Length: 312
Image 1 (spheres, rainbow, N blue to C red):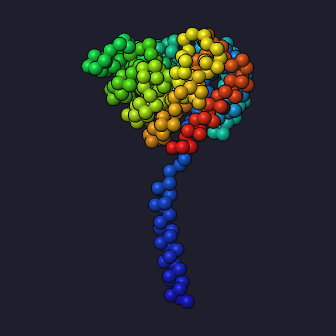
Image 2 (tube, rainbow, N blue to C red):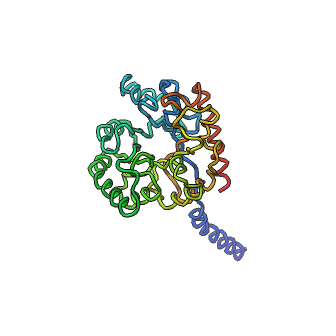
Image 3 (cartoon, rainbow, N blue to C red):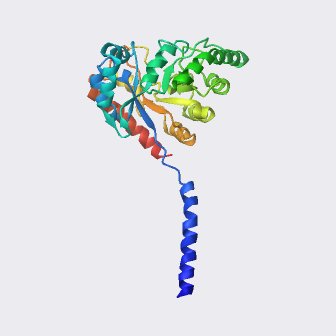
């Protein structure tokens, strides 16, 4: 009996000793952290948009100003306290609805410091804008200009650090930071972790970058990516098109296969936010006629992304 008890004890002890290594080896399931861009609803009032956030699988909202929306202006008109109360009135799986990002292309990378105080007031940790500089450079000239841009950003990044925010530069086609090389140089030369990247496949596709190229770039940029736009080129957003053609910008409608892209995001354990996105024509209108229709289309795209993610 004693021998049996001893063997049983040793067996139980060995099994228990193995548990920490098993727990350590297990990684949490990779998920996309969705954020809802207010511009998807055009200039609809915040009282109509905020109830849609959790319906889209998001728990934070990205606030846009005119011309793409006007929710930033709405906040000033109602007052910060009233907006804070509106946020508190909406609950998510993670608690109270938060303003997770402020997008300010109108202010640019050198004009954000006043807006940082607003971000800090609401605990917002991300601000998105475009870069500055010529878009037609290559090679050594491009590297030199990206380095100059990074140097010019230093005082703004110091202010961002004090406010607890990251400035994410989108690879917009109209500025210096628009090609894969410019993005890689920015990631290498950025003087602070508070300078990140808002990666938009739409603009990279227009340069001929395919899904495999997107995946390779994501792996090269790694944790510098703070925002990922689930957005493809489709037939573009610069001229008025029939709605079914305009919607080709949305994931699952155009030709871009998001599976290798999501595989790369999973490989780098992407912890930033993902915005399901497109631009309507003209700017400032909802992507579809009503808030409910906008939400349904975002959820259709989200379902496609989740199916892609399940494959990797």
